[in-house]
Length: 382
Image 1 (cartoon, rainbow, N blue to C red):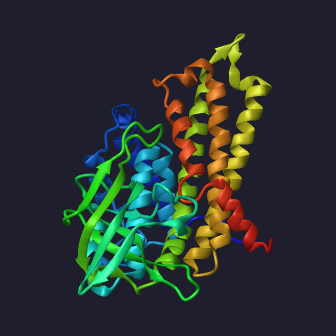
Image 2: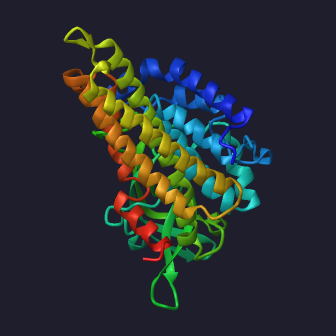
């Protein structure tokens, strides 16, 4: 067993960490406070190759392995969850479905700009009444002649309502199966299509400088060739997309936990009480020891899941485990980190407060912790 990263993976960690500390860290707090999505930062992340990392070079991707991609997300999340969300959703949910299921024409039309970070693409799955029950989607798409006519709405869609958004992939009901259950298909809808409206969502507790949208489809007409893959493949495509997306959410939990731990360790060594740094007190030292141990466990679990995916082996169970464990590890780590900071941990002047807020979505997005346990229980035969 070889636990060493390759030289390329080590280089990616080093370069992305340097970028995050130089470009993101100085303005992360301000962007969060103002609820401001940064097009400038997003384009800079594109320039250093953080979009399309697992896409082949024929579509202007970076042709890297999945562990390299996850390391990049981890290092961005170590500094700011919002920018990590832009990268994670941009790759796993935006680029991924088109790359894995799109036609050659669709790939050549959209992927080069998306991989260059010149544009973003959303993944329209969640609806006001269909969250964990993704099969409860009400959005419909009816084929009329050579066009799909789409009606419905989506909510909590990342990267779908900013100036850089090029379009969205929409899961819609396109018929009824022989067993009476809805048939789902995924359809590509470009920004600016008549009847399609994307509205930014504000007043979020977390990821405040990530772009989140509500989508509305009112007799939206798109060419029939905009379907992703075959009619009726949408549910399979959605499940496959979420499997990969769980790895990136796990990376956000891992990176966020590492970032909060780093802040807590630094503070504990600097803060003095009763004549010595508080890191010397067993109550604090044990919290930090627990954090270090859980982060190490989380990293090994997540990297194994990514290794399985990179080697084209079954990874779905491990992806659910990685997403669940990493998100809950971050929950425990940020709780310890705030406690170690004391009253200062509750103030926005200290970055640990932002980490504390950003963590909660990781237990909800791309499958709640409860859903992950359901998925895992099914894989182990319960």
